[in-house]
Length: 310
Image 1 (cartoon, one colour):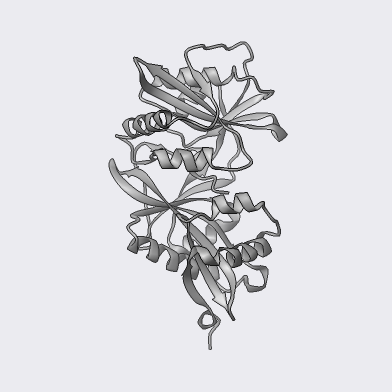
Image 2 (cartoon, one colour):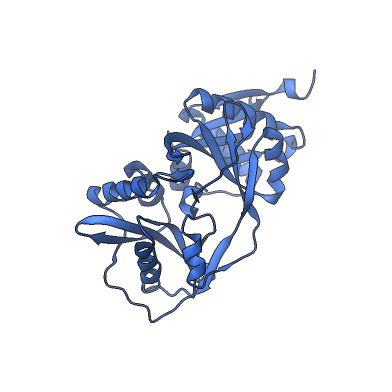
């Protein structure tokens, strides 16, 4: 009997979440709060596992999201929380489980899957069939403390239903001509930012004639005194630049600001003095139905908030 024949590959229901978390903790050698586990492994996050002798020894999740792909509305999946427990590493489990999970995701209507891979995981992803796009970098600059802009409305959670709907409408309008962009639906905004425990986010809104022209979502990272642009989008460059400037006036003790280089507005950041930093991660894409990589030609919008399931 071969090594692979010892394993069963299954999709787990929410009732098996506890066993999945136990294996996750063994693999990553860490524990999170129950509230954070409930947020990560919720009813929407597809959980897949390799099982040996009745125990979960490898896992992978795919979170379905709404997106624009090649100018069309689509359902895509964010690959997240992949692991193999130490005693079962080196047996090709990650590759086999990934193929099983992606095949199931395709059957559930996902036309594309994406993820963020570090350098160590890239060989395994390539064996599955993922395409590796250019390295993902941060763009960063020092804070300019005297910037003040009173035309941007800043608030924190909870948002109103109108604010969530405005974000979705703005996201859909801004994404119309993109090759890849996650849509910030009302459910996405609530789940990703408002329902997430143990974090606080700042929401900036730029309205004109009662229509939301642009928005940004920021997170203060106290350990590095840095303000992250988790998301920033708008229907024109001027609005995005106003949001970029206004974020510097937030009453927080940050010294630097940064964003991912794959934001559709990266050139605006560079024009405003942001510098590219070293890269250690890559954006990866795959067609689940064919286990074939995807080359994106055209405008891509990928922001920190599109990946940070954990």
